[in-house]
Image (cartoon, rainbow, N blue to C red; front, side):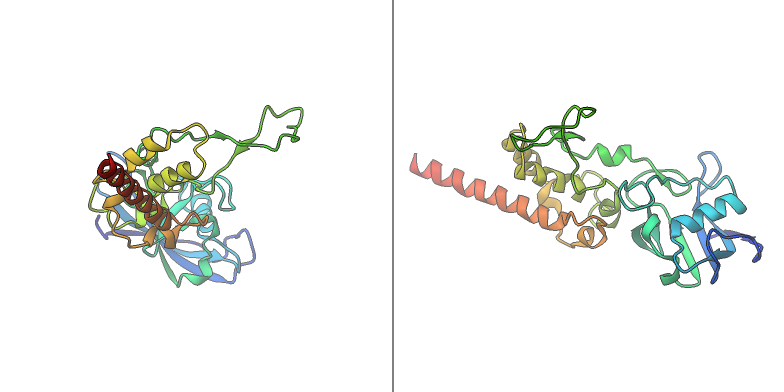
Amino acid sequence: MTTDTTTHQANAEAPAAVEAIGTRTFRVHRFKRGGGAPRFEEFANVPVGPATTVLEALRWIRVHLDPSLALRHSCFHASCGTCGLQVNGREVLGCVAPVGELGPVITVEPIANIPVLVDVVVDMTEFYARLPEQHPYVRASEALPEATAPADIGGFERYEDCIECGLCLSACPVSATSDGYVGPAALAAGQRLLEEPRGVDPRTILDWADDPLGAWRCHAAFECTEVCPSGVHPAERIMSLRGELVSGRIRNDREETQA
């Protein structure tokens, strides 16, 4: 990636979504397929308010300065995971990252270790491909026998804590050097299936995790847990997976010895 920049000067009097308390300069990663090498583009005098988030500032840039800036977002309250970014070198959800805590110049890049489609938008197909094949995206949830679903709902569904934002994969130092490593989100999903299999054979998950590029490839840096916005604790779940694998090997050795 080059560090060449193109600078856009915003009119300081331009209207902001909230009362402005100052301005910030944004250095935003730009990339278009067939449009040359990736570069940074600088947007100066972007007005910010006391509660402005990175995503709101980027949307302001798109509306007032450059409508070609490609963004990915949906819920605006850290539930969907679609606005994952690297901001000043750290993985965050843009919708809940306050601009006021980030200094006068803010560098925005796409999350790492996932192919970039355009600007700060990545191809999440790569992320989903790492999940275990046995992991369904939506799973039926147990319900108490006396529970009755509302008339317009066919049944209860379970929404797991992981919002599939990809921040853990971006922050993982192993993923940066090993394309084959399945990554923390996938391993955490596998461990979650062990907790509540709901029709999944736990042995298939353990076989999948017991691979040189599975649970054993993790270096226990715990960066994934540090950046996880929804409390999944992927590093701890990977350690739990390892414990299950070791326990299984010990049990198998004992059974073979006793046979």
